[in-house]
Length: 448
Image 1 (tube, helix red, strand yellow):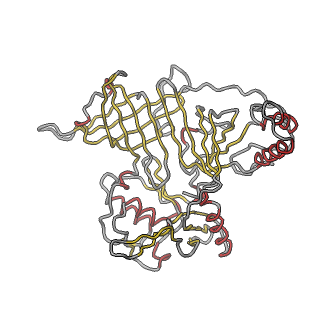
Image 2 (cartoon, helix red, strand yellow):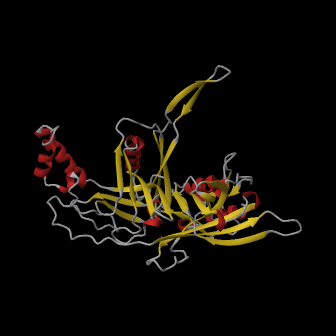
Image 3 (cartoon, rainbow, N blue to C red):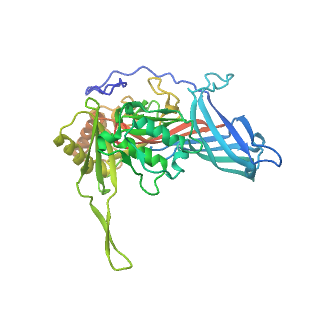
C-alpha cells in the first residue's frame, strides 16, 4: 500500500520486501554560531552603546513550540567569550545559526539557510564552579514582543483590508514597528464583510499576539512567526517541512503511546476555510459547552466551570452535515489524545535530503519501522515472529502469538504521518547535534 502524502515516497507492501541495499552512513559536521547584538546600560555621559558579538557556544537548546507560545532557547558560553556582567546588559537580540558545515575545515555559512532562531534575551546569568566560568542565556523568539504587549488601543476599524489592520497593530508595538509582515491569504479581505460590523474591540487583558490570532482566526487562518517575519497561512500551508524518519535507519530512539482511558473534555471549535468561495464557517461541538465542574462562591452561589474550546482548522468545501461529522470525530477521537510519541535522531537530513534542523510545530513527520530491522517483529516473517513469541522461558500461547503478529502487520499498514507538536533541537560542542520530535495523530498541522 503506497503512502499517498505528497513529498513522501516510502511504500509499504504486504509481501516481504527484497533486502534493501546497505545504507552508507553520512558523516555530518554540525556547527553552531550565535550572533549577539548587545545594548549595554548607559555609561555616565554616553549614549546607548550597541555591540555585535559572534561566538561559538558550549551548548544550545532550541524548543519550537505551538503557535500560542513563543519558541524558546537556552545557550551556555565560556565566560571568556562573553565576559559581561548581566547587570550591564540592557537588551540583547540573539540569532542562532545551526547546520552541517560539510567538512571539518569549513566554517558554518551564516545565512538564512542555517538561521534557526531569532529572539531576545530574557535571563542572562553567570556561574562559577568546578566546570569553569560560564555565561548562560535564556530567551524567547520574536513573537515575545507581541506576547508581552497588552493591548492598550481602542476599537479597531475592520472595514479596511485586514492586512492593513495588522500592519497598523505592529506599528503600535515597541520593537515591532518595522517587523516584516506577509498577509498571505488575507489579501483583499475585510473582516467587516464576515462579521457584519466595522469595529472590533479586543477583550480586556488580551496581548497583541492574541488579538492578531483572533482576527485571522475568524477566517480559519493561523499566524506564524517565521524567525523575524510574521506570516499568515491557511491550515494546508502550515506544514513547511515533511520529514521521513525510519527506525533502524535514521532514528536513535522512538516512543509511541496510545491513551485508552484518559479523556479531555473540550468544546471543539471547528473553523473551515473554503478557498474557492473565500469564506470561513465556524461550528461548535457540542453546541453548548460541557460543564466540567461546579463551585460554590463565598456568597453561596453555584458557579459552573465550562470546558475549554479546542480550535481545529480545516480547509476545503464541506456541507453542513460534513462539518458536523468532522467536529464530532474530533470531539470523540481527537480529544482523547489518541496516539502520540516522540522520535530522536542525530541525523541532520532525512532519507530524502530534507533539513531536519528546520523542523518545528505544525510540520509533518513520517514514522516507520524498517522492515529489514530483525530486532523488531516487523523484520521477521510471520512464521519467524510466531516462533519467536512461542519460544523461550515464558512462551506465549500460539493463538495469542498469531493474533499479536497479525495485529502488528495491520499496524504497519496504518497511516503513520503525524503532526509535529514540539521539536527540541540541541547542539553541544562535544556531543554534536540531536533533535527530539514530539508528534501526535493530527497530520497536516490542522490541530494547533
